[in-house]
Image (tube, rainbow, N blue to C red):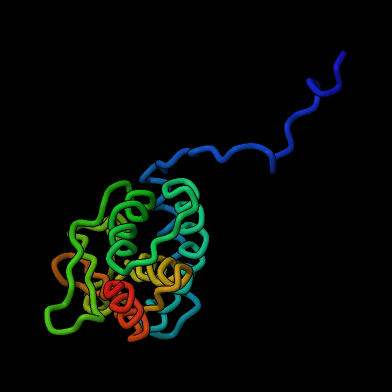
Length: 188
C-alpha cells in the first residue's frame, strides 16, 4: 500500500473553503442577547455599554476583514476610500448580516464623514430595550466596532458610532490623513 494515499493532506496545504455563510437567525439573536446581558452586568452607564459592544465588535472586525479579502478579493485590499466603503457596504455587510446595507452617503458639508444606513438592522431586530434607555442605547454599536476595526485593518483609520436616524445609521469619521492620501491618489 502506498503511504502517500493513506495520509490526510496537512491542513495548511488545503485550499480555503467558502464555508457556510449563513447562521440561523434565532441562534444569532440568542447569542447576541447573551452578549448584551453579559456586557450590561459589567458596566455602570449606557455609554459604557455602547463602548463595550463596540469593543467586542472590533474583535470580530479585525478577523473577518482578512477572511473576506482572501475569499472575495483574492487577497487584494482596497486602496481607495470609496472602494473600501463599497466593500464594507456590500461584501462585509452581506457576509455578516445576509444582505447589503441599505445606503451609503457622504455628509454634504464634510468630506471626512460618511454614513452607512440600515433601516431595519438584524442586530437590533430581537433586542428589546427599556424605554428609558431607548434614546441612548443602540446595540448596533457592535456593528460599528466591526466596521471601525475593518477600516483600521485596511489602513483607513476612522471613528465609527451608531445612532438612531433613518433606522440605524453608522457615522464614519475618517482621519484627515485618509482624505489627503485619497486625494493624492486621485491626482495621479
